[in-house]
Image (cartoon, rainbow, N blue to C red; front, top):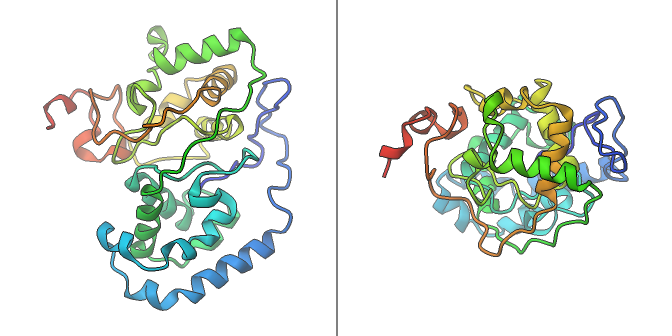
Length: 278
């Protein structure tokens, strides 16, 4: 859904962020993948045109798993991610979150050539179907990859993720993504089970203004308060955590968000308003 951005991957050996380093090839033949993907879209074009946008209908569309071959070629079977650390897990993410990311790639608000190309001509109805399909997938998570980060770096990351840094007005990741870091519907994704390099890249992209979310962009504001060392520590700790068996996004926030977040919609975007929502 959102592969590693060029120039933002981290150095696996030193733990430092290298914003100017070129990304190594992600796949051996991008043209081959693009051809397969286009063939998949074209083969199912009649069914796509007849489908509606409602989530219930989207989940009932015959052959949806076969249509998603273009997605699973990079994101792994059922969207469970692959071991290379470049393509994240999209299975089980909140449906509205997935839909917004697909629309952002299609409309050029998020930039990754393969995603922009594949989604360029797809309708909102079909993007809704894709989002609904992957939101319903819950394959098991693999164990975390062994980390090379030091105990000091991991402790710094744990504190940022679980308690934040109140003196600098940096909220904990858990304050928005949930105590279990599993995400919150409709628009906040889970943070566990993601590769360290991918988390580094996304936080770096937000910090540099290359990735944006619906206004008010709470992630952009928070990421700009983080140093590269903070980002490396948080991503190292997150990637080292095992994922519990019952890892699913919460249906609603358990407590008010620490900042306004446009991805949660008007009713949930203002801090201090969530306690009254049933």
